[in-house]
Figure 1 (cartoon, rainbow, N blue to C red):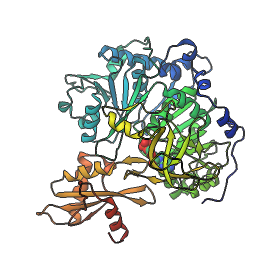
Figure 2: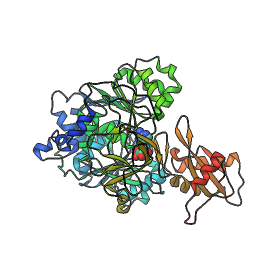
Figure 3: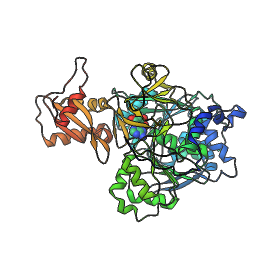
Figure 4: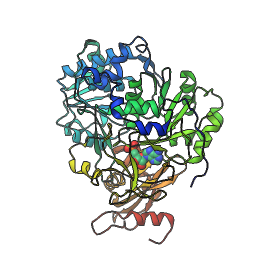
Length: 564
Ligand code: AMP
């Protein structure tokens, strides 16, 4: 048990009184903050962009302050309205209709965000893809979703197996320059140059799909998690109360849009609040990151434990920069150790606020709020309007300080609305009324604070990214030397967890360091760097149960040197 309690950092935060708000909270009141509650005309793109573009106070704020090592660009809400109108016209010209899937496979760049808004304006479903995905993962996602259009770069297009994707009709290439376009390809720049700034937004139903985002599952196949326009109700109020966004803030959410945190709190949610929003492209680079905070006077920073661990390792470098603009710092994605919360207070003057949610929940579910005492080590308390509980496998609520499944009472606005083309997998989450079963293990203390204790399945978080062991095992087995493979997560001081693979070889192959490296190279080339095992150990055989599954319990025992 954690004994220490940190006092609230800001009694004047947007959410002043957690307990009183929980008592009186009503989603209907949040809905009244949207123009559709008066006009009946619904589209998140209108609420997030066009509404501010028409407001003299907000039109010239920056919905995107973009920078990477080579490019710097600022896009106001007013400009974003025009650019996204143009892109919506491009999509229309290509024959995109409401409900069509348009996938975005780009590095972080302004075009990524313009494309997201443009898709929403035509009522299409956008699909954000991780920049680092390799060919197999790209094919699975585009094929499962039946994507009709893909926005990508000529370089990344090399990882798209077009001939195996009959439903994919158009490729929009960003930065095509003078290359000769193949049939089906068009140039972003040429299409945008000729498209009109005027566009009539497609009004939709609150329950119409907005985006489809893939996440690793405990089986090999990734899950397409579907979110709808009504999500905006949850985005707006969590951004106000958890991120504590106020007029004049500069938010920086470091996640890329291929991860839901990047889509929701790196774009849609801050836009609904009409604040300035920083996006930094490129890889982690400590000095560059500190410079961004200093230059843009970032006030609210939403990042992840993997980032804090890297900062802690190079604290001296941070001292060269003025980071005092930061008034609120939040974390998500992996356990935030108590010492990191205290470290944050020492370095930034404010403790780090942990938040808990998932791709499937669509919005922050459990959090530490600036007006509430923090118990370091706890993910915090449920957002007002959210009922969270620790339950047994029958769905019965367990008493405080008892370990069980973390469950949320179903029916909040940003809850996923489906798993694409897999109704059965969707229903599994809701198999015990009235709960959404998260798959996380947790306990709650006597004051209603929750403590994350791990996953019920074997999913591994590597530097904040969810990895399904089956996905890695299947990829490993495609290497000509590999007979069988079993994978587990192994704790790592920098990345949280790393992947460890146990491999048995086919008869003609002998274990060697060279072969380990060859297998890793194979994984990097055909799959993704994120699923390359950091450690490989050869074993004569991989333990499997009667129904054929890898017995990971035995692998873990091997790792710990315990009897198997
Ligand atoms: P994803 O859907 O990729 O965002 O991953 C969601 C999973 O990340 C959750 O089910 C948790 O296992 C983990 N997670 C999210 N937030 C936290 C947190 N604050 N502390 C520990 N684990 C977290």
